[in-house]
Structures are given as C-alpha cells and as structure tokens.
Image (cartoon, rainbow, N blue to C red; front, side, top):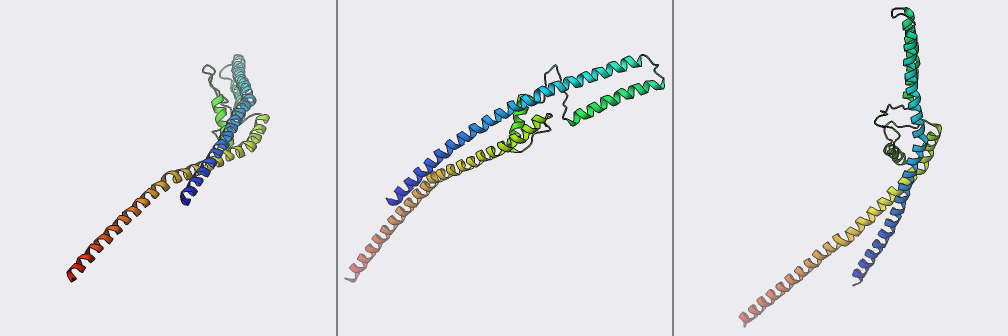
Length: 222
C-alpha cells in the first residue's frame, strides 16, 4: 500500500513538472516567433529598399554604357584604332562596377517576374539562420545598419534559441519519464504479480502432492 501511494505521488509530481515545463516551452516559443518576425521585418526595412535602389542604379549604368558606346562609335570608323579604345574604356568602367556589385552580393533579378533576394521568405530564413547560427546561403547585408543589426540580432537571438532548445530537452525528458512510469513500470508490475501468483499456485500444488504421498506411505506402513 505504501509503495502504491509512493508511485502515485511520483506520478503526480512528474505530471505537475510536465505541465510547468510545457508552459515555459510555450512562453519561449512565443518569444522566439515574435523575435523571428521582428527580425524579418527589420532586415526587410534595412535591405529591401537599398537592394531596389542598387539594382536600378546598376541598370541605369548598363543603359548609359550602351548609349555612350553607340554615340561615340558613330563618330569613328569601325577599323580605326581609336574604335577599340572607346570600347575598352567603357567596358572597363562597366566591369569595375560589375565586380564591385558582385562583391557586395549583387543578385540579378527579373523585373517582370518581380524576383527579389530580400523578399519575406528569404529574409525569414536569414533571421532564423542567425538565431540558430547555421548560416543561410550567400545572403549578406549591404548596408552598414544592416550589418550592425545582424551582430546585435545574433547576440540576443542565439541565447533565446538555446533556451528554447534546453526547455524542449527538459520537456522530452519528463515526457519519457512519465511514459516509463505509466506504461513500462505498470506492465512490469503486472507480469511480476502474475509471476508471483503462478509461483504461489505451484507451491500449493507441490504441498498438496507431498501431503498425498505422505498419507499413502503412512497407510501402507499400517
């Protein structure tokens, strides 16, 4: 009876702890989601506008290069030496701008389809990669404020994510403890009680058979 009461008290304690850890887990999960959504909108605000402006600026440079080449090459003959000088001069300017934009993480997009690197899904994955410290593709902020926000966001986001992971570990630990106490221990207790009943019945049968043999031997001696 005492062992049964102790098992019941242990089961209730595990249940209370499980509920408490579940509540903490929900609070941390809400904080993680709120922090993730906030980081997504922050990086959209800091990087989306600059990306659009940079793409427009680069497209303008490409058009200006084509116009300058067409204008200046009309004034010279195709086989003159100065023709190649004009071409290479403007191509060098365009090449420098292209290499600079590539180093800054420039990504060509199709304006008709509306593709953009710093869109909401990509930015959400970028914010999540900062919280989990896993990294996401080749996305890097171009603006100074964006890089500063990346460092500050990681400083507070990584401990918040680790706290949620630790809480999830406690939740699963208490869950498996509860499962073991509810299922395994009761299953083993049932078989142990059944085994004890079997041994008790066997011992009784052995005693009865021994008593019968003793009575028969006593009757023969008489």
